[in-house]
View 1 (cartoon, rainbow, N blue to C red):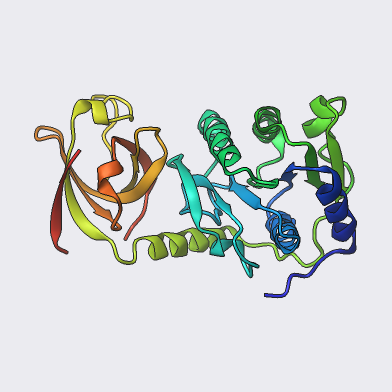
View 2: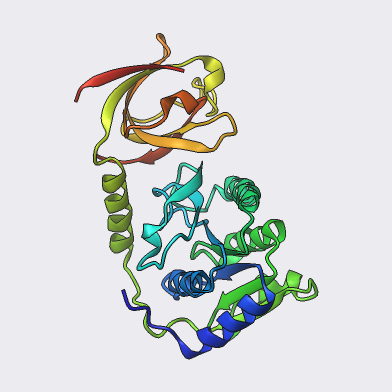
Amino acid sequence: MDIKVEEEWIKAKEEFIKSGKKLIVIGCSDSGKSTFILYLANEIYKTGKKVGILDLDIGQSNIGPPSTIGFGIVKKNLNSLLEIESEKLYFIGDVSPKGNLLQIIIGGFKLLNEMEKYNLDYILIDTTGLVDGLIGELLKQNKIEILNPDFIFLFEDNKERENLIKPFIFDNKIIIRLKPSSNSIERTKLERIEYRNNRFREYFFNSKEFEIHFKEENILSPNFKKFIPFQNSIVGFLDKDRFLVCIGVLKKIDLYKNKIIVNLPESDFKRIKFIKFSNLQYQYGVRHHIDI
Protein backbone atom coordinates (compact mmCIF):
# COMPACT_ATOMS: atom_id res chain seq x y z
CA MET A 1 0.00 0.00 0.00
CA ASP A 2 1.27 3.45 -0.89
CA ILE A 3 1.07 5.78 2.10
CA LYS A 4 0.01 9.27 1.15
CA VAL A 5 2.36 11.36 3.24
CA GLU A 6 1.46 14.91 4.18
CA GLU A 7 4.33 17.37 3.76
CA GLU A 8 4.29 18.37 7.43
CA TRP A 9 4.65 14.72 8.45
CA ILE A 10 8.16 14.60 7.04
CA LYS A 11 9.42 17.41 9.26
CA ALA A 12 7.60 15.95 12.28
CA LYS A 13 9.16 12.55 11.61
CA GLU A 14 12.67 13.97 11.40
CA GLU A 15 12.26 15.89 14.67
CA PHE A 16 10.96 12.84 16.52
CA ILE A 17 13.62 10.44 15.22
CA LYS A 18 16.34 12.95 16.12
CA SER A 19 15.30 13.80 19.67
CA GLY A 20 12.43 11.55 20.77
CA LYS A 21 11.83 8.02 22.00
CA LYS A 22 8.17 7.69 22.91
CA LEU A 23 5.21 9.46 21.31
CA ILE A 24 1.45 9.44 21.59
CA VAL A 25 -0.84 10.38 18.72
CA ILE A 26 -4.16 12.03 19.57
CA GLY A 27 -7.01 13.08 17.33
CA CYS A 28 -10.59 12.38 16.38
CA SER A 29 -11.60 9.34 14.33
CA ASP A 30 -10.50 9.30 10.69
CA SER A 31 -8.02 12.15 11.15
CA GLY A 32 -5.00 10.16 9.95
CA LYS A 33 -3.57 8.96 13.29
CA SER A 34 -3.03 5.34 12.33
CA THR A 35 -1.68 6.22 8.89
CA PHE A 36 0.80 8.58 10.52
CA ILE A 37 1.85 5.80 12.93
CA LEU A 38 2.31 3.46 9.96
CA TYR A 39 4.43 6.04 8.14
CA LEU A 40 6.64 6.64 11.20
CA ALA A 41 7.02 2.91 11.89
CA ASN A 42 8.27 2.23 8.37
CA GLU A 43 10.61 5.22 8.36
CA ILE A 44 12.15 4.17 11.69
CA TYR A 45 12.42 0.54 10.58
CA LYS A 46 14.43 1.66 7.55
CA THR A 47 17.03 3.18 9.86
CA GLY A 48 17.67 -0.19 11.49
CA LYS A 49 16.30 0.93 14.86
CA LYS A 50 13.86 -1.15 16.92
CA VAL A 51 10.33 0.26 17.05
CA GLY A 52 7.22 -1.00 18.81
CA ILE A 53 3.59 0.09 18.52
CA LEU A 54 1.15 0.24 21.43
CA ASP A 55 -2.42 0.12 20.11
CA LEU A 56 -4.95 1.49 22.62
CA ASP A 57 -7.91 1.64 20.22
CA ILE A 58 -10.29 -1.03 21.55
CA GLY A 59 -12.97 -0.44 18.91
CA GLN A 60 -10.91 -0.19 15.72
CA SER A 61 -7.87 -2.13 16.88
CA ASN A 62 -5.12 -3.12 14.48
CA ILE A 63 -3.08 -5.20 16.93
CA GLY A 64 -5.25 -7.93 18.40
CA PRO A 65 -9.02 -8.42 18.09
CA PRO A 66 -11.59 -5.77 19.06
CA SER A 67 -12.20 -5.45 22.82
CA THR A 68 -8.44 -5.68 23.48
CA ILE A 69 -5.45 -3.37 23.58
CA GLY A 70 -1.96 -4.59 22.83
CA PHE A 71 1.47 -4.05 21.37
CA GLY A 72 3.69 -5.49 18.68
CA ILE A 73 7.20 -5.04 17.31
CA VAL A 74 7.82 -3.86 13.75
CA LYS A 75 9.81 -6.62 12.04
CA LYS A 76 9.39 -5.63 8.38
CA ASN A 77 8.24 -2.81 6.14
CA LEU A 78 4.49 -2.64 6.63
CA ASN A 79 1.64 -2.19 4.18
CA SER A 80 -0.81 -2.07 7.08
CA LEU A 81 -0.69 -2.04 10.87
CA LEU A 82 -2.78 -5.22 10.69
CA GLU A 83 0.40 -7.05 9.68
CA ILE A 84 1.92 -6.58 13.14
CA GLU A 85 1.83 -9.68 15.31
CA SER A 86 0.81 -9.01 18.89
CA GLU A 87 3.36 -9.64 21.63
CA LYS A 88 1.01 -9.00 24.54
CA LEU A 89 -2.71 -8.21 24.75
CA TYR A 90 -4.89 -6.88 27.56
CA PHE A 91 -8.61 -7.68 27.61
CA ILE A 92 -11.02 -4.78 28.13
CA GLY A 93 -14.21 -6.57 27.09
CA ASP A 94 -15.81 -3.65 25.26
CA VAL A 95 -15.35 -1.63 22.09
CA SER A 96 -16.02 1.79 23.61
CA PRO A 97 -13.79 3.67 26.07
CA LYS A 98 -16.84 5.01 27.90
CA GLY A 99 -17.25 3.11 31.14
CA ASN A 100 -13.81 1.52 30.74
CA LEU A 101 -11.42 4.41 31.41
CA LEU A 102 -9.73 2.78 34.41
CA GLN A 103 -9.26 -0.56 32.63
CA ILE A 104 -7.71 1.13 29.59
CA ILE A 105 -5.33 3.19 31.73
CA ILE A 106 -4.25 0.16 33.79
CA GLY A 107 -3.91 -2.03 30.71
CA GLY A 108 -1.94 0.59 28.82
CA PHE A 109 0.46 1.02 31.73
CA LYS A 110 1.02 -2.74 32.11
CA LEU A 111 1.60 -3.15 28.37
CA LEU A 112 4.07 -0.26 28.29
CA ASN A 113 6.02 -1.86 31.14
CA GLU A 114 6.20 -5.06 29.07
CA MET A 115 7.35 -3.14 25.99
CA GLU A 116 10.25 -1.65 27.90
CA LYS A 117 11.66 -5.17 28.39
CA TYR A 118 12.31 -5.33 24.62
CA ASN A 119 14.92 -2.55 24.68
CA LEU A 120 13.14 -0.62 21.95
CA ASP A 121 14.62 2.52 20.45
CA TYR A 122 11.19 4.02 19.77
CA ILE A 123 7.66 3.48 21.04
CA LEU A 124 4.63 4.73 19.09
CA ILE A 125 1.28 4.91 20.90
CA ASP A 126 -1.98 4.99 18.94
CA THR A 127 -5.25 5.96 20.64
CA THR A 128 -9.02 5.96 20.16
CA GLY A 129 -10.88 8.80 18.46
CA LEU A 130 -12.63 9.79 21.69
CA VAL A 131 -11.20 13.27 22.27
CA ASP A 132 -14.18 15.58 22.77
CA GLY A 133 -16.14 16.26 25.93
CA LEU A 134 -15.23 15.60 29.55
CA ILE A 135 -14.75 11.83 29.13
CA GLY A 136 -12.50 12.27 26.09
CA GLU A 137 -10.36 14.86 27.86
CA LEU A 138 -10.07 12.79 31.04
CA LEU A 139 -9.10 9.67 29.11
CA LYS A 140 -6.43 11.35 27.02
CA GLN A 141 -5.02 13.43 29.88
CA ASN A 142 -4.67 10.35 32.08
CA LYS A 143 -3.10 8.37 29.24
CA ILE A 144 -0.53 11.09 28.71
CA GLU A 145 0.21 11.33 32.42
CA ILE A 146 0.72 7.62 33.05
CA LEU A 147 2.41 6.71 29.74
CA ASN A 148 4.61 9.82 29.88
CA PRO A 149 5.52 10.33 26.19
CA ASP A 150 8.17 12.89 25.31
CA PHE A 151 6.30 13.80 22.10
CA ILE A 152 2.58 14.49 21.70
CA PHE A 153 1.25 14.62 18.13
CA LEU A 154 -2.11 16.34 18.12
CA PHE A 155 -4.30 16.15 15.03
CA GLU A 156 -6.58 19.19 14.98
CA ASP A 157 -7.75 21.97 12.67
CA ASN A 158 -7.41 25.09 14.80
CA LYS A 159 -6.37 24.38 18.40
CA GLU A 160 -9.87 23.14 19.19
CA ARG A 161 -8.47 20.66 21.70
CA GLU A 162 -6.28 23.02 23.68
CA ASN A 163 -7.95 21.95 26.96
CA LEU A 164 -6.77 18.41 26.40
CA ILE A 165 -3.07 19.26 26.55
CA LYS A 166 -3.12 22.27 28.89
CA PRO A 167 -1.89 20.19 31.87
CA PHE A 168 1.29 19.30 29.96
CA ILE A 169 2.51 22.53 28.42
CA PHE A 170 5.09 22.96 31.21
CA ASP A 171 6.15 19.28 31.31
CA ASN A 172 9.05 19.51 28.84
CA LYS A 173 7.01 17.54 26.33
CA ILE A 174 7.25 18.45 22.68
CA ILE A 175 3.75 19.10 21.34
CA ILE A 176 3.40 19.03 17.56
CA ARG A 177 0.10 19.97 15.99
CA LEU A 178 -0.78 18.38 12.66
CA LYS A 179 -3.71 19.03 10.39
CA PRO A 180 -6.08 16.08 9.86
CA SER A 181 -4.94 14.16 6.81
CA SER A 182 -6.39 15.41 3.55
CA ASN A 183 -6.45 11.78 2.38
CA SER A 184 -8.51 10.38 5.24
CA ILE A 185 -11.98 9.07 4.47
CA GLU A 186 -14.61 9.37 7.18
CA ARG A 187 -16.20 6.04 7.96
CA THR A 188 -19.82 5.63 9.00
CA LYS A 189 -20.91 3.92 12.20
CA LEU A 190 -22.00 0.91 10.16
CA GLU A 191 -18.59 0.71 8.49
CA ARG A 192 -16.91 0.71 11.89
CA ILE A 193 -19.20 -2.07 13.11
CA GLU A 194 -18.46 -4.10 9.98
CA TYR A 195 -14.73 -3.63 10.53
CA ARG A 196 -15.07 -5.07 14.04
CA ASN A 197 -17.20 -7.96 12.80
CA ASN A 198 -14.63 -8.78 10.11
CA ARG A 199 -11.86 -8.75 12.68
CA PHE A 200 -13.85 -11.10 14.93
CA ARG A 201 -14.63 -13.39 11.98
CA GLU A 202 -10.93 -13.61 11.15
CA TYR A 203 -10.05 -14.32 14.78
CA PHE A 204 -12.65 -17.08 15.19
CA PHE A 205 -12.25 -18.56 11.71
CA ASN A 206 -10.83 -21.89 12.92
CA SER A 207 -12.35 -21.85 16.39
CA LYS A 208 -13.76 -24.95 18.06
CA GLU A 209 -16.25 -25.56 20.82
CA PHE A 210 -14.63 -26.26 24.17
CA GLU A 211 -16.06 -27.27 27.51
CA ILE A 212 -14.18 -25.52 30.31
CA HIS A 213 -14.45 -26.36 34.00
CA PHE A 214 -13.40 -23.64 36.41
CA LYS A 215 -13.12 -22.84 40.09
CA GLU A 216 -14.43 -19.73 41.82
CA GLU A 217 -10.92 -18.28 42.13
CA ASN A 218 -10.52 -18.44 38.34
CA ILE A 219 -13.26 -15.81 37.81
CA LEU A 220 -12.30 -12.12 37.70
CA SER A 221 -15.75 -10.83 36.74
CA PRO A 222 -18.39 -9.61 39.22
CA ASN A 223 -20.30 -12.01 41.45
CA PHE A 224 -22.65 -14.25 39.46
CA LYS A 225 -25.47 -13.35 41.84
CA LYS A 226 -25.38 -9.86 40.33
CA PHE A 227 -24.07 -10.60 36.85
CA ILE A 228 -24.97 -13.47 34.53
CA PRO A 229 -23.09 -13.38 31.20
CA PHE A 230 -25.18 -13.37 28.04
CA GLN A 231 -25.04 -16.08 25.42
CA ASN A 232 -22.69 -15.10 22.56
CA SER A 233 -20.84 -12.64 24.79
CA ILE A 234 -17.08 -12.26 24.48
CA VAL A 235 -15.03 -13.95 27.21
CA GLY A 236 -11.38 -13.23 27.98
CA PHE A 237 -9.05 -16.03 29.10
CA LEU A 238 -6.04 -14.62 30.92
CA ASP A 239 -2.64 -15.80 32.11
CA LYS A 240 -1.24 -15.52 35.64
CA ASP A 241 -0.24 -11.88 35.00
CA ARG A 242 -3.74 -11.11 33.67
CA PHE A 243 -2.62 -10.66 30.09
CA LEU A 244 -4.83 -12.17 27.43
CA VAL A 245 -4.24 -15.72 26.21
CA CYS A 246 -7.29 -15.77 23.91
CA ILE A 247 -10.88 -14.59 23.66
CA GLY A 248 -13.89 -16.81 23.17
CA VAL A 249 -17.63 -16.66 22.48
CA LEU A 250 -19.79 -17.92 25.33
CA LYS A 251 -22.35 -20.50 24.23
CA LYS A 252 -23.57 -21.80 27.59
CA ILE A 253 -22.83 -21.46 31.30
CA ASP A 254 -23.69 -23.96 34.02
CA LEU A 255 -23.09 -22.39 37.45
CA TYR A 256 -24.02 -25.58 39.33
CA LYS A 257 -21.28 -27.57 37.61
CA ASN A 258 -18.86 -24.63 37.27
CA LYS A 259 -18.75 -25.21 33.55
CA ILE A 260 -18.89 -23.04 30.45
CA ILE A 261 -19.05 -23.95 26.78
CA VAL A 262 -17.24 -21.50 24.49
CA ASN A 263 -15.99 -21.18 20.94
CA LEU A 264 -12.20 -20.69 21.05
CA PRO A 265 -9.29 -20.64 18.64
CA GLU A 266 -6.50 -23.11 19.35
CA SER A 267 -4.31 -21.60 22.09
CA ASP A 268 -1.82 -22.46 24.77
CA PHE A 269 -4.53 -23.48 27.22
CA LYS A 270 -2.02 -24.39 29.94
CA ARG A 271 -1.35 -20.68 30.37
CA ILE A 272 -4.99 -19.88 31.26
CA LYS A 273 -5.45 -18.99 34.93
CA PHE A 274 -8.35 -16.51 34.91
CA ILE A 275 -11.66 -15.97 33.11
CA LYS A 276 -13.13 -12.53 32.57
CA PHE A 277 -16.67 -12.18 31.26
CA SER A 278 -18.09 -9.17 29.41
CA ASN A 279 -21.39 -7.79 28.11
CA LEU A 280 -20.00 -7.45 24.59
CA GLN A 281 -21.84 -9.83 22.28
CA TYR A 282 -20.69 -11.37 19.02
CA GLN A 283 -23.29 -13.21 16.89
CA TYR A 284 -21.61 -15.78 15.19
CA GLY A 285 -18.22 -28.71 16.19
CA VAL A 286 -16.64 -31.02 18.21
CA ARG A 287 -16.61 -30.24 21.90
CA HIS A 288 -13.30 -30.38 23.77
CA HIS A 289 -12.72 -30.47 27.52
CA ILE A 290 -10.40 -28.23 29.57
CA ASP A 291 -9.80 -27.99 33.33
CA ILE A 292 -8.13 -24.85 34.69
